Image (cartoon, rainbow, N blue to C red; front, side, top):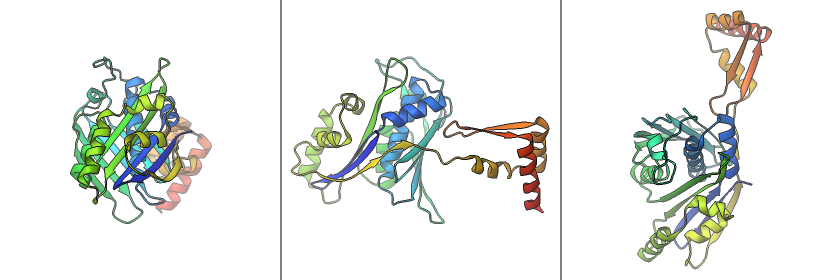
Length: 291
């Protein structure tokens, strides 16, 4: 089962997650090829790691809007461990670069934005230019540039020979303000020698074991919490009805003339079908609300 673990040790905090299942679910729902699956899986994992710092009921949206052939990549995640996401062009494939998926080329250059929804009137949005398109490097740079938080973000998705997610996961590690120079040096050395995240997950390592590898040599690791993770969308037929009722009378009338309508959720690919009778009922309600 996909999980996220939070821990601290000697002036350092670390979050690690295994996200193989939810990455595979997103790929299945959107019909992602290997390149899109790797980019989307990394982005969703990053969003879950960012959301781990939020309070209950808060959520976060990460959006890569690059000029590469994948187009926009968006992921929403909540503090409770739910995530959803999509990539604009899931079918795109590119030649490998040094034997690896060309995620950076697929994303391209543009803008990375992160929006925190706190339930207050004003939400917080920060942004920075996309540096490499490799997702983890860009999120590391974002945390430093926009939130003044020195961090190291590691993300990885391994695609199997069947074209689906074989292993996926990630981590964020951050020195706290009181971290000593010795602690930071030890952390930097560990990061130089740690295996890629997807390799660790593929070898069966749990989030706790990933954190133990990140914090090798630290005196005491305090594990704070463990959260179940899942691909979960907030869409429903009722919410789709509410969206349809915001259309103009002429637009809904055209759907009635067509005799049916199909609405597809951009985030999860779920399809909602409406009969002519249902559309007439929605049009009547919408007309009454506009009077």
